[in-house]
Length: 121
Image (cartoon, rainbow, N blue to C red; front, side, top):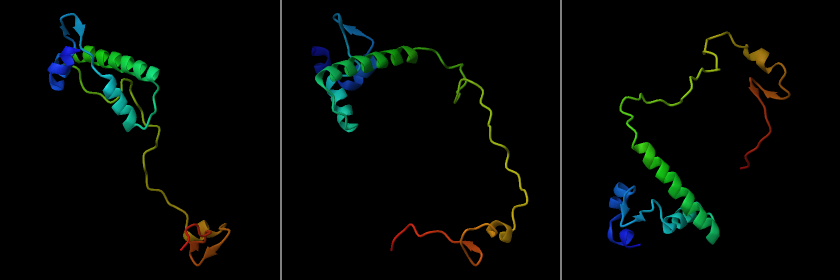
């Protein structure tokens, strides 16, 4: 495709929705899909590479459409539904005395719980 060879990548990113002489500029190339697959340590068949290229190109095209929306009056959010914490508030309460905590310990040494060694020297 002559467009991809002659136009720098940054320009393609900016002009992605445009058409040049009836040719739609792809948002992602097969080479880029292969590169991402290699980074992710994925072994893709030729058919999977073609399918991934088409699917990722479609996803990136949709993101381009979303980027065209005017969101200047939309307040940033972290979630679209109201969230309520299910955790209780921290509050200081009396705790067990040391002797009460160690009372049912299967094995203790002085004022400490004794547990089996799990780290070897």
